[in-house]
Length: 117
Image 1 (cartoon, one colour):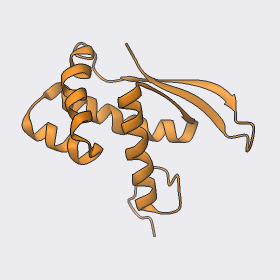
Image 2 (tube, helix red, strand yellow):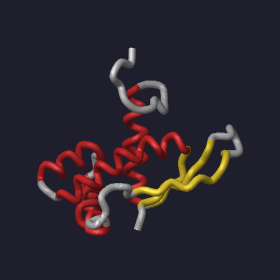
Image 3 (cartoon, helix red, strand yellow):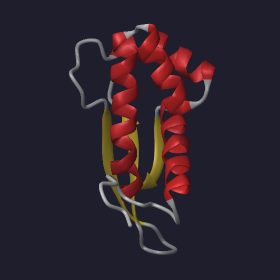
Image 4 (cartoon, one colour):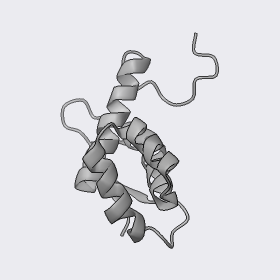
């Protein structure tokens, strides 16, 4: 049973959902723009916002939390040095979701998700 489990499933089980979210967050923070389904974008938005908020804090504990969430040292370094100063004056809402329309194969609603400048 899924009692007290927040969020959407996105895949077959909890470990697969966690892997999808980690992969999407890594791709978004690396390339700063990705194309994905609307459901996945809405779900990964909270993880990315949390990581950027940690990077704005800038202490060792926040860096370790970000490393645990993303799993890539170079990416964590990029987020803390390059992205954190960009969002210094912004209190949340670091991502933008723009709808594209349905995907041709299965008619899933597609979006472009990007970091706000």
